[in-house]
Image 1 (tube, rainbow, N blue to C red):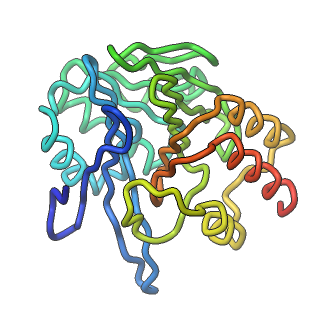
Image 2: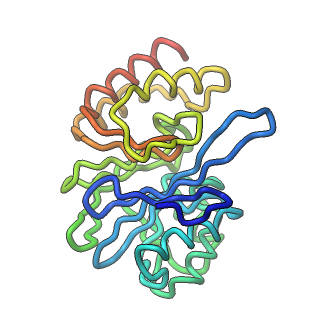
Length: 243
Protein backbone atom coordinates (compact mmCIF):
# COMPACT_ATOMS: atom_id res chain seq x y z
CA UNK A 1 0.00 0.00 0.00
CA UNK A 2 1.41 3.37 -1.05
CA UNK A 3 0.82 5.89 1.73
CA UNK A 4 2.34 8.95 0.03
CA UNK A 5 2.14 9.28 -3.78
CA UNK A 6 4.79 12.01 -3.94
CA UNK A 7 7.53 10.19 -2.02
CA UNK A 8 6.22 6.70 -2.94
CA UNK A 9 6.49 5.71 0.71
CA UNK A 10 4.71 2.39 1.17
CA UNK A 11 3.89 -0.21 3.81
CA UNK A 12 3.54 -3.98 3.33
CA UNK A 13 3.18 -6.93 5.68
CA UNK A 14 6.23 -9.21 5.24
CA UNK A 15 5.47 -11.69 8.05
CA UNK A 16 2.59 -12.23 10.45
CA UNK A 17 2.07 -8.86 12.13
CA UNK A 18 5.35 -7.41 10.82
CA UNK A 19 5.25 -4.52 8.35
CA UNK A 20 8.00 -2.98 6.23
CA UNK A 21 7.76 0.80 5.77
CA UNK A 22 9.79 1.75 2.70
CA UNK A 23 10.76 5.13 1.29
CA UNK A 24 12.71 5.12 -2.01
CA UNK A 25 15.10 7.97 -2.75
CA UNK A 26 17.23 9.07 -5.71
CA UNK A 27 20.80 10.32 -5.40
CA UNK A 28 21.99 13.24 -7.59
CA UNK A 29 23.98 10.78 -9.73
CA UNK A 30 20.77 8.97 -10.63
CA UNK A 31 21.32 5.91 -8.45
CA UNK A 32 18.50 4.78 -6.20
CA UNK A 33 18.47 3.79 -2.53
CA UNK A 34 15.85 3.13 0.13
CA UNK A 35 15.22 3.43 3.86
CA UNK A 36 13.14 0.80 5.62
CA UNK A 37 11.63 0.68 9.08
CA UNK A 38 9.83 -2.33 10.53
CA UNK A 39 6.66 -2.16 12.61
CA UNK A 40 5.73 -5.12 14.80
CA UNK A 41 1.99 -4.74 15.31
CA UNK A 42 1.08 -6.31 18.63
CA UNK A 43 -0.30 -5.53 22.10
CA UNK A 44 2.79 -3.37 22.65
CA UNK A 45 3.89 -2.32 19.15
CA UNK A 46 7.56 -1.82 18.31
CA UNK A 47 9.13 0.21 15.52
CA UNK A 48 12.61 -1.02 14.61
CA UNK A 49 14.56 1.99 13.35
CA UNK A 50 13.05 5.42 12.80
CA UNK A 51 14.68 6.49 9.55
CA UNK A 52 16.45 9.84 9.17
CA UNK A 53 14.79 12.81 10.81
CA UNK A 54 13.70 14.27 7.47
CA UNK A 55 11.62 11.15 6.75
CA UNK A 56 9.70 11.29 10.02
CA UNK A 57 6.48 12.66 8.54
CA UNK A 58 6.43 10.01 5.81
CA UNK A 59 7.12 7.14 8.21
CA UNK A 60 4.51 8.41 10.64
CA UNK A 61 1.96 8.65 7.83
CA UNK A 62 2.66 5.04 6.85
CA UNK A 63 2.33 3.79 10.42
CA UNK A 64 -0.96 5.65 10.82
CA UNK A 65 -2.35 3.63 7.91
CA UNK A 66 -2.28 0.46 10.05
CA UNK A 67 -2.43 1.68 13.67
CA UNK A 68 -2.73 4.85 15.77
CA UNK A 69 0.73 6.33 16.22
CA UNK A 70 0.15 7.05 19.91
CA UNK A 71 -0.14 3.28 20.56
CA UNK A 72 3.57 2.81 19.85
CA UNK A 73 5.30 1.30 22.88
CA UNK A 74 8.90 0.70 21.80
CA UNK A 75 11.35 2.28 19.35
CA UNK A 76 14.23 -0.09 18.66
CA UNK A 77 17.60 0.88 17.22
CA UNK A 78 20.52 -1.35 16.32
CA UNK A 79 23.13 1.38 16.83
CA UNK A 80 23.30 5.14 17.17
CA UNK A 81 23.21 6.60 13.66
CA UNK A 82 20.85 8.93 11.80
CA UNK A 83 18.96 6.35 9.75
CA UNK A 84 18.53 4.14 12.81
CA UNK A 85 17.30 6.79 15.24
CA UNK A 86 17.45 10.27 13.70
CA UNK A 87 13.84 11.04 14.61
CA UNK A 88 13.77 9.21 17.94
CA UNK A 89 12.76 12.29 19.93
CA UNK A 90 9.87 12.99 17.55
CA UNK A 91 8.49 9.47 17.98
CA UNK A 92 8.72 9.71 21.75
CA UNK A 93 6.81 12.99 21.62
CA UNK A 94 4.11 11.43 19.42
CA UNK A 95 3.74 8.28 21.55
CA UNK A 96 3.61 9.14 25.28
CA UNK A 97 4.17 5.54 26.45
CA UNK A 98 7.01 4.72 24.04
CA UNK A 99 10.58 4.10 25.19
CA UNK A 100 13.78 3.46 23.23
CA UNK A 101 15.08 -0.11 23.00
CA UNK A 102 18.80 -0.56 22.45
CA UNK A 103 21.96 -2.23 23.68
CA UNK A 104 23.38 -1.41 27.09
CA UNK A 105 26.34 0.26 25.38
CA UNK A 106 24.09 2.45 23.22
CA UNK A 107 22.08 3.45 26.28
CA UNK A 108 25.22 4.32 28.22
CA UNK A 109 27.09 6.34 25.58
CA UNK A 110 24.32 7.98 23.53
CA UNK A 111 20.63 7.29 23.98
CA UNK A 112 20.31 8.20 27.66
CA UNK A 113 21.77 11.61 26.86
CA UNK A 114 19.94 12.59 23.67
CA UNK A 115 16.39 11.84 24.87
CA UNK A 116 14.79 12.40 28.25
CA UNK A 117 12.92 9.08 28.41
CA UNK A 118 14.87 6.24 30.01
CA UNK A 119 15.71 3.59 27.40
CA UNK A 120 15.02 -0.12 27.79
CA UNK A 121 18.62 -1.32 27.60
CA UNK A 122 18.71 -5.00 26.73
CA UNK A 123 21.47 -7.46 27.56
CA UNK A 124 22.71 -10.02 25.05
CA UNK A 125 20.09 -12.77 24.77
CA UNK A 126 17.42 -10.85 26.69
CA UNK A 127 13.85 -11.17 25.47
CA UNK A 128 11.20 -8.51 25.05
CA UNK A 129 7.57 -9.65 24.94
CA UNK A 130 5.21 -7.57 22.82
CA UNK A 131 2.22 -9.92 23.11
CA UNK A 132 2.11 -12.55 20.35
CA UNK A 133 5.69 -11.70 19.38
CA UNK A 134 8.72 -12.07 21.63
CA UNK A 135 11.89 -10.43 20.34
CA UNK A 136 15.36 -11.51 21.41
CA UNK A 137 18.18 -8.97 21.58
CA UNK A 138 21.59 -10.01 20.24
CA UNK A 139 24.73 -7.99 20.90
CA UNK A 140 26.71 -7.74 17.63
CA UNK A 141 29.50 -5.25 18.38
CA UNK A 142 31.12 -3.92 15.16
CA UNK A 143 28.87 -6.12 12.99
CA UNK A 144 28.42 -4.56 10.64
CA UNK A 145 29.64 -1.40 12.41
CA UNK A 146 29.35 0.43 15.71
CA UNK A 147 30.59 -0.93 19.03
CA UNK A 148 27.08 -0.39 20.39
CA UNK A 149 25.46 -2.51 17.67
CA UNK A 150 22.82 -5.14 18.35
CA UNK A 151 20.03 -6.81 16.37
CA UNK A 152 16.71 -8.48 17.11
CA UNK A 153 15.11 -11.81 16.26
CA UNK A 154 11.45 -12.85 16.40
CA UNK A 155 11.38 -16.62 16.80
CA UNK A 156 7.61 -16.91 16.29
CA UNK A 157 7.82 -15.74 12.67
CA UNK A 158 11.49 -16.48 12.00
CA UNK A 159 12.09 -12.80 11.26
CA UNK A 160 15.58 -11.40 11.83
CA UNK A 161 15.81 -7.61 12.03
CA UNK A 162 19.26 -7.43 10.48
CA UNK A 163 19.81 -3.66 10.17
CA UNK A 164 22.63 -2.75 7.79
CA UNK A 165 23.58 -6.37 7.14
CA UNK A 166 22.82 -7.25 3.49
CA UNK A 167 22.14 -3.66 2.47
CA UNK A 168 21.04 -3.52 -1.17
CA UNK A 169 21.13 -0.61 -3.63
CA UNK A 170 18.03 0.54 -5.48
CA UNK A 171 14.54 1.38 -4.33
CA UNK A 172 13.67 -2.00 -2.85
CA UNK A 173 10.54 -2.11 -5.00
CA UNK A 174 9.68 -5.64 -3.91
CA UNK A 175 8.73 -5.64 -0.25
CA UNK A 176 9.71 -9.30 0.11
CA UNK A 177 11.88 -11.23 -2.32
CA UNK A 178 13.34 -14.71 -2.64
CA UNK A 179 15.87 -13.59 -5.27
CA UNK A 180 19.60 -13.25 -4.67
CA UNK A 181 20.41 -10.28 -2.44
CA UNK A 182 23.96 -11.28 -1.48
CA UNK A 183 25.36 -10.45 -4.92
CA UNK A 184 23.88 -6.93 -5.11
CA UNK A 185 24.72 -6.31 -1.46
CA UNK A 186 28.38 -7.27 -1.88
CA UNK A 187 28.69 -5.22 -5.08
CA UNK A 188 27.36 -2.23 -3.16
CA UNK A 189 29.51 -2.81 -0.06
CA UNK A 190 32.93 -3.33 -1.54
CA UNK A 191 33.66 0.14 -3.04
CA UNK A 192 33.01 1.97 0.28
CA UNK A 193 33.16 -0.91 2.68
CA UNK A 194 31.05 -0.04 5.72
CA UNK A 195 31.84 -3.25 7.62
CA UNK A 196 34.11 -2.88 10.62
CA UNK A 197 35.99 -6.18 9.96
CA UNK A 198 36.46 -6.87 13.64
CA UNK A 199 38.33 -10.01 14.71
CA UNK A 200 35.03 -11.62 15.70
CA UNK A 201 33.01 -10.68 12.58
CA UNK A 202 32.84 -14.22 11.15
CA UNK A 203 32.03 -15.62 14.60
CA UNK A 204 29.16 -13.16 15.08
CA UNK A 205 27.70 -13.90 11.65
CA UNK A 206 27.98 -17.61 12.40
CA UNK A 207 26.10 -17.13 15.65
CA UNK A 208 23.35 -15.26 13.79
CA UNK A 209 23.14 -18.08 11.26
CA UNK A 210 22.40 -20.48 14.12
CA UNK A 211 19.12 -18.63 14.68
CA UNK A 212 17.91 -20.11 11.37
CA UNK A 213 15.88 -17.08 10.29
CA UNK A 214 13.49 -17.48 7.39
CA UNK A 215 12.83 -13.76 6.82
CA UNK A 216 15.54 -11.09 6.85
CA UNK A 217 14.20 -7.59 7.53
CA UNK A 218 16.88 -5.52 5.78
CA UNK A 219 17.05 -1.80 6.44
CA UNK A 220 17.96 -0.93 2.85
CA UNK A 221 16.44 -2.78 -0.09
CA UNK A 222 13.97 -5.66 -0.12
CA UNK A 223 13.25 -7.91 2.81
CA UNK A 224 14.22 -11.48 1.96
CA UNK A 225 12.64 -14.90 2.50
CA UNK A 226 14.51 -18.20 2.40
CA UNK A 227 17.19 -20.15 4.24
CA UNK A 228 18.72 -17.37 6.28
CA UNK A 229 21.31 -19.62 7.92
CA UNK A 230 22.87 -20.47 4.56
CA UNK A 231 22.75 -16.86 3.38
CA UNK A 232 24.44 -15.54 6.53
CA UNK A 233 27.19 -18.15 6.27
CA UNK A 234 27.80 -17.14 2.65
CA UNK A 235 27.97 -13.52 3.77
CA UNK A 236 30.57 -14.41 6.40
CA UNK A 237 32.66 -16.11 3.72
CA UNK A 238 32.37 -13.11 1.40
CA UNK A 239 33.35 -10.62 4.09
CA UNK A 240 36.33 -12.74 5.14
CA UNK A 241 37.50 -13.13 1.54
CA UNK A 242 37.15 -9.48 0.54
CA UNK A 243 37.99 -7.22 3.49
